[in-house]
Length: 81
Image (cartoon, rainbow, N blue to C red; front, side, top):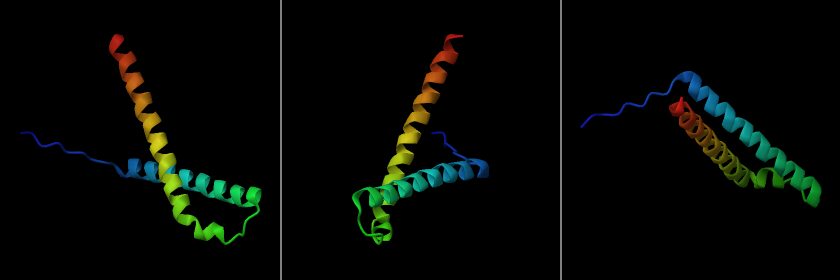
């Protein structure tokens, strides 16, 4: 059997961390907006941090899904040419 080597460059790691960071900031801003809209206490900004983290991972997974879908579509069109 052949071994499969997967290498991830430092640039790719930085890019993925940056994308997840943007997702985390978006989830954090949604938490702030929900605190303002529902007029709750500001301590929820820290007490709900685990949910913000989970939401940011969900956003990241959604972005990864669309990136994979985009790549598959590009590959399908490249084969026809």
